[in-house]
Image 1 (tube, rainbow, N blue to C red):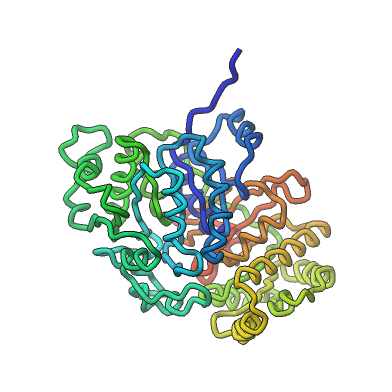
Image 2 (image 1 turned 90 degrees about the horizontal axis):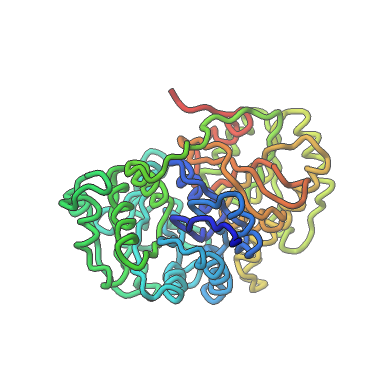
Length: 470
């Protein structure tokens, strides 16, 4: 008797950092799509085990390509593509950050596109960077992002223009990709998206995403989509999906807005009938936050819990690079602090102006260290610290902040996948459960937080729990 095979997933994706990958997974899951995120390219045995449980409608792999030099990206991305391609999904997404930050040298999105096109040369490439709910907008090909209460063009954004590894000096997405070696392509701007309207999927093709898909010159090169509103995002994602169904499949260089918009589009069509994940999370008596982020947003979150009486401790990143870190002594201090006040934060920087940032840059320049080596050392140090804390007992939930360092932390920790437990969409925060062979790690709840994510009260809400706003 032949073995039973699960149906092909609707979409597969590679996330170029772990925080973004977990957010992408949560946006698919938010709309009822059964989803799983692997921390390494899954082996045939892992995929067979997934199929035996009924498979998934979305399968992702979390990676670290965002922090890598261009020459190292193929070795990181290609194994994930090779593992996911046989699943036969009509859509493959390279999940990039919604700030689209990359350079020709570091985390090159142009190189990521070339890796996808090398595997699927017949598939057109769509570009969708917007996520309006999260304050990310694309209008006439130019990208904008929120900071505090204001919206800035990407090259004038207070954080992104001075990002330590990928500073952004351009807002035109086409020009950013051209600088990274991609040809000029086509654009689908807000006028075309608004004119498409919103007929239900499967309706007569007099308008809507299906008709818009037929009007696009997909062979011109990368097709860049605008989106400034939620409705525009859904239409853009629907257009990409309709082309994936009509042709030989689609490639997407896209932020989590694609997952969010596509999930809504599939829900409206009746293609997805599973319930969404919980938006309620019970509190815990202690929470550990490990931050490798130098974002001012994360700094404000640290300031907030320090004012609430949490224990806050700086970890010297130069010391990590040099190999000096007393994990057991730090774990003892944190265990006492958690017993006393219920919350503790360890950080390598407290905002972009922290003196540690300048010290790290000087160390990197003096010793010719690649930036990703710092993220890897932070990740290894944090993974060792998490294990030490788990051995001491009492810790059920953690936060790891910083897209690059969180990725290395998870890989070093030994978990092989995660699944969404609950989401606080007001903070774009998704608490997940780790899947691991090691019972010490299996079941640990973790929030992987990007540097720019969340209100000042985010860390407190992760300890106290949350429920949907009324």
